[in-house]
Length: 235
Ligand code: PGA
Image (cartoon, rainbow, N blue to C red; front, top):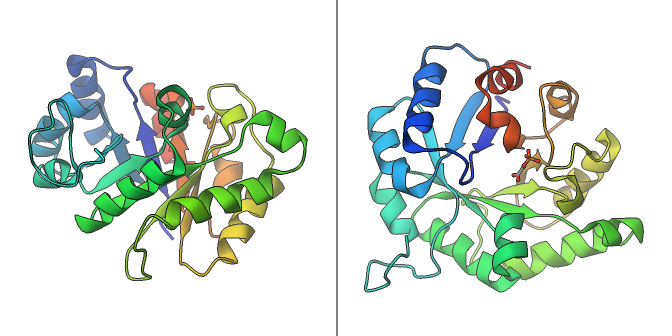
């Protein structure tokens, strides 16, 4: 399996810096596939110019079609720019913008309707982990999300396990704790792939990628630095 690295640039970069990073990336060789979640204002341009790179939306609208929805960007808009991936329900969206599992599920369905691949983020807060309730929490979170979709096994959905306590914190769950989440997904009725995200760096990427059946990594701050990103892509 060619594991994927999803670079989540969030709202961190200017247009010029995003172009510079892409220019740098296309000159390099790396062994894993790369998907870049660039800022929405730049993504159509970047996908058109850098046809050999894959870009990913950071969110899609709840609205499922073109229409009079000022400031919204529907899955169909991204698809029309040849953007085939979307991160849905990132912790930033859930924590800051209060997105619920229902909203996340409906957005996942909007992606599936456009044959886009949703990368659906799930993850528990620290107090849930400390009470050892994270497994039940994650199963419930996934069930609620998927209940708002018409998921079938011929549609690809990637689940990103991003424990909220590990995002941007320089701490990670250990390998067996990530493996435990893979086992949970394996017991569901649906075929889901898993990526891990939360304080991934070039120091820990190799160990995490060694987990059998892990599809890849979702990388935030380390993906903004070209040297770090390349080390992760080649780890
Ligand atoms: P981080 O972010 O790698 O900086 O922890 C991950 C994310 O928010 O997706």
